[in-house]
Image (cartoon, rainbow, N blue to C red; front, side):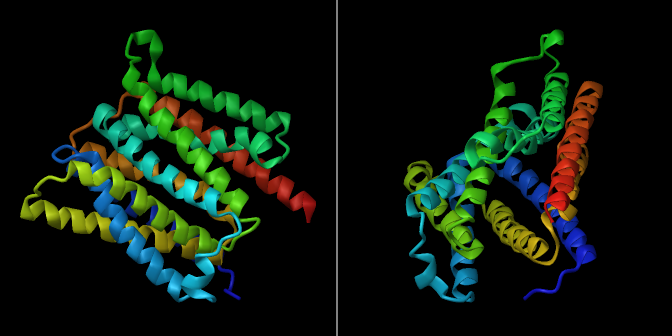
Length: 292
C-alpha cells in the first residue's frame, strides 16, 4: 500500500498543472502551423506507448487490462477524451490560451451538476448555488453585453462539457475496473481513434518542430505520471483545489510567450468560477467527512 503524504501529493499536483500548462502552450504553437488532428494523433501514439508500458508493470499486466468489465464504456471514454483535446486546442487557436482556459475551468462545476443524473450522487442546494454562481462567472468572462460573444466562445465551453462527461464516466467505470485498466483504455482507444482521423491530415513537419512535438509527447507522459502519483499519495479532496493553478500558469505563458493580454472581465469572471469551484470541493470534503 502506498504511504499517504499530503505534502508530496500537493507538490506533485502543482508540478502537474505546470506541465499541463506548458503542454497547452506547445499544442497551440504546433496547431498554428499544422493540422490539429495530426498533432493530437502523434501525441496519442506516444501516450498509448506510455500507457502500455505503465500497465505492463502493474499486477495482471496487459492481459488484465484487455478484459475490462465495461469494455464499450472504457473505449468510449478514450475516444471522448481524444476528441475533447482536439476541441480544446481549437479553442486555443480561436480565443487564445487565456480566454479559452478561463472558460474551460468551469468543468468541475459541470461535473458537480451532472454527478446526480449520471452517478446518482446527491447535490445539495449549496452546491447548486455555487454551480449557478460559477456559470454566472462564465458569462462575465464571455462579456456578452460588450458584443464580444461569438460562436468561437462556445468552443472551450463544449470542451469543458466533454471533459466533465469524461471525468464522470471515469468515476463510473472505477466502480468496476481498476485505475490502471482505465488508464490503459484511455491511451489505446484514444490512439486508435486519432489514427483513424489523423492519418488523413498528415503533412511534413520541420525538423525544429519535431523537437517541439517530442517535447509535447514527453510532457504529456510526465504530466499523467505525476497526476497518477499525486492521487496515489494524497486524497483527492486535498489536492484538487491546486488544479486551478493551471490557469495561473497558462496566463503566464499566454502573456510571456504569445503576447496575450489579461482583460479585466476575464480575470474577474475566472476568479468567480474558481471561487465557486473551490466551494464545491469544500462541500464535497465536508460531506465525505460526515460519512466517515
